[in-house]
Figure: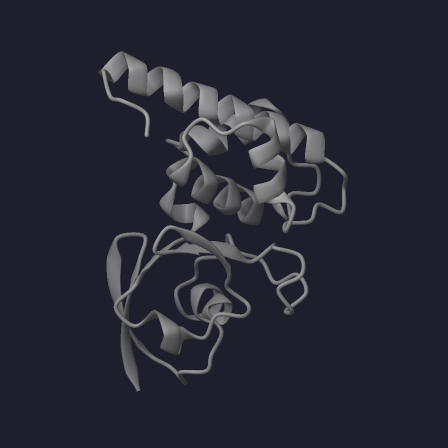
Amino acid sequence: MTLTVNINGVDHALDVDPSTPLLYVLRDDLKLNGAKYGCGLGQCGACTVQVDGRAVFSCLTPVAALDGRRVRTVEGLGSIEDPGPLQRAFEAEQAAQCGYCIAGMIMRAQALLDRTPSPTDAQIRAHMQTNLCRCGTHMRILRAVRRAADTMEAAAAVRGEPLE
């Protein structure tokens, strides 16, 4: 069965078993290795990506559910040469220790900032609670999300764009 899925702005015709988890398609077929296999049960968040702007666990999402939908991975937020605001904030706050959870953390945080450009600390904490960091860098992660929100808000103000 061939499905068409838009991943990071590019349409991909995928000839895979429809029950295949998105995580395996991203990593094995498309060589997008940002999302990590953590638990395979949707309990850790290492595999988090966005589908139509919502954070989802790619280990639990079958590709059959994605035909014609938009998927965004951490690779779609920026590059090594030109990281996105959230990626820069995670680096500035040294939010990664081992780094295994970071792509999932960034994708969950991006979903929040896309919907709520200026979240409160309570909103950040509530939104991020489903993703685990075994190294314990949660406070740095929260600071990074706050920093990115502030940076994005300031950039929008300079451009004269209203925040939603």
